[in-house]
Image (cartoon, rainbow, N blue to C red):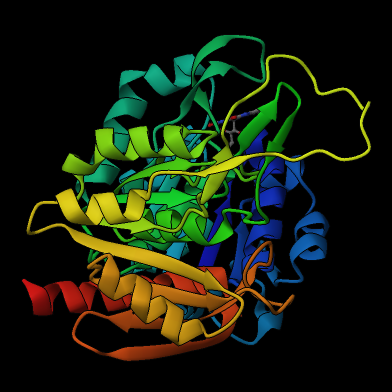
Length: 396
Ligand SMILES: Cc1cc2nc3c(=O)[nH]c(=O)nc-3n(C[C@H](O)[C@H](O)[C@H](O)COP(=O)(O)O)c2cc1C
């Protein structure tokens, strides 16, 4: 569980940190907020304590806390983030100045540190600021590059506060095991849509959440990740390259095109097994009482991928079943010669399709059977990656 020392300094972007605190609270992070005096002139400490219900500290010399704030807090946290980081605070920390709670805590803190510089482009490009930020990088700080765009003061250039999602990603990455570093992971996710006519299609209830969580977790753990996704109402996880597809055939083409690159292929998409034999050019009119749609089988992507893969590629399938879960999953794994299959029972409404929760049983090529009790898909994704890692090692 991240224990974050979130230091807010006096930049225009300070108000954006309110959203960051709110996201941290939703994730279950533990946060202590430290503000410089200038920061309190942009956003009231009350705003931070209201959205997060976390303690907010502003005065290093406040004895009412019954502790020496900067030393106690710097031992409590396991990561320190300065967001936004003003040119002023960057300069102070880079030069060992400790004259307020933020700079004192930063100097005393020994764990991973993230700086989010955000300022006017001329302040950012000033050689003194450039040198200070470089100095911080060299001493182990992770300095995020500001985005380029319209700045709060109306100018255009580099200096914008980045997306909070990027900051959360960096926190997780720095606190994570980094055990997938340089591993290429291809993930498929979501449903497919098989058109009937220009306005109708056949699809299924897959939301894509499980595949997206796996892609996100792999990226946080250092992997290079390509996500091939059917239509899903989900945003791309930070740092992941997404390729959107609609039909099973488009999914197949995309996977075949990309699979050579991958060390691990995780096929979590719910690809249609059947599609209409013909797609009508015009919308079907409501003129007859009954009608049939003739379906034909789609190509089996998982079977094909497993058949043509290189020997060192690790292939993981998913089995969404409503009955005989393990029997059907084992048959799928053995007939398609997969390294691993993640089976989930989609007959329950509180897990699986469209839910943020899942409960899975993982069958491995060496006959290991691992059950993961109902939990958030983000948790299940981490477990799946742990299991893949240990079984890849065994197979290698
Ligand atoms: C309206 C206004 C906006 C400011 N915005 C920024 C900013 O976005 N980034 C920055 O580095 N400094 C900005 N400053 C300057 C800092 O507030 C100033 O350097 C202050 O001393 C920073 O104090 P701190 O680093 O202790 O928080 C701004 C100042 C004003 C008056």
